[in-house]
Length: 486
Image (tube, rainbow, N blue to C red):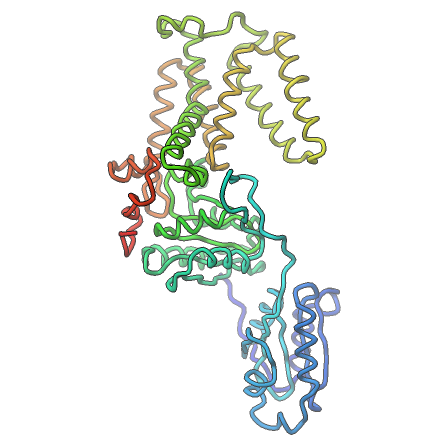
């Protein structure tokens, strides 16, 4: 990443203010404030971004400085200002004006004083932020209702609230030549694999781009590789309790400023099928919910291709299931009906995202009555196509991970097309290719299908069944935790 050369802070305040005024575009941007003041008969200047600074804190600092007398700053000016006369907790200094500029643009206040060859950085920033609320995509019947927000410090505090561990680490990084996006690597030092943490920080430090416009999603694409694979290599969560549980297992979380989603890495395929609701109920109920979810996910992938195979080749239909298949064909081939409805469901989903909540009911009526029912009545679609696609859509919506649900949808469409072209051979070959694709992927060195491939029975039992918490006394060995016992 290209690095801007150092610009030393001069003892002459006019040299400093001239450089900062030009670099920050003080007269070109209305929200960049240069406040020139004079305290103890000494010229000073504050630099900050309007909207990022707590006005009451800044007024307090200015009031305290205005009370100083010239003789109080005759010697050792910098040390007295920082340690005695500026009453604030988060305060630092720098001898580089370019570093001061980056700090100002991130929300801090820079104080330049005549006769001092360092800039004083006061972290009195505040960001526009919403209050933590329950995420829409990870709702639970019982449990906490707070969720991550777009402000980095709020998110780290939500995790700290749940993990009062002295070895919990929040390491600060920045990425993006122009955006200077704030990133925090979060892990428990006594548990997480040190080599994996180092590798992750190295990857982030090597990100070379102007800006991370899509925040955590841009980070994922730079880190995970496998750009054309539809399967997510990381897990996103907006729940602090989910992030905390992964940290206790030995995972590493990446928190990006401006995003309410936290990245959990490394993960396997099975992490995308777990939901907090399973752990908010009794173990037997959680195991049942997990079993139902697995059925829904597998149905969303394989139900339609299998049903289509039985329709186009009735010889595979077992006795007693002769009712499988449409009583009459529609006006167009079945495979085209499937593709039309698949695209139609995606159109409805996108329309729902862009539709104001007050009109959501009207959108549902249009989708259900005016499109689905009328399409069947005019003979464009058959009832069975609507039925089985509805079951597949339910399985898609039951998938906890939104990214995994989209990947499964692409796999379903691929299997449908292969089944239409090559019948049973297409379904078998397509399924094998998908399994090989999954088995060949790794998420930061962790096999994607572990503990199924490579097989680990002790760990696989925890994937299939929601075990009681007292019996989950070992961390996943694939993460190489320093402390394997819970």
